[in-house]
Image (cartoon, rainbow, N blue to C red):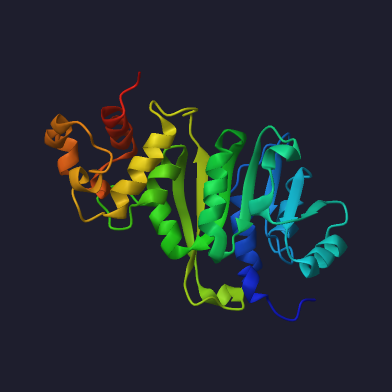
Length: 254
């Protein structure tokens, strides 16, 4: 066994089997579709996944963990690589779900990669730092509502499932964790320019205390837009559909 977790990988191994089982039970598994586990570590979730599906790919960067996984799960495909650097389309999977106890230090990057591959992903069930999970699932007019909230909720239905205390990990993290479930919604393409949508969301929240007409003044070129009611609000007051409408207002479709 590994004597200790490696800090530079952000490892906090889940040691409570009841919670591992609960996480795996939270994902809806289609026998015909693959599930990718990110950072399986010593196999806390994998142990329960293999009893529910034989269509599993494990992606693990730590060579020491790879050895343990190979011994425990000899019939399961294990990819020794950095998830953030993998071209997921090269795995040859049409539809799949993702599960994992995600390293806190790369959890946001994992979510942005999920967004890049959103049309191939059915569900994501993952452990996040509680603060990040709250941001993802928060609603407009909340101080926690931000860039991640809008971008993820544009394509996924978000549900916070339960919190997990530090005592359930080795080593113990300094913060609470939360498990969330992201289910792909029916939106294949936003009714606006997606790159401009991202630009407006990021600019709007970069100065979240300011009204949008001030936060977005770098890209607002038409004077009449300054009188638009939506621009008198702050970014945290706008829903996903509001941001789509605002994108089309500032960058009308040709």
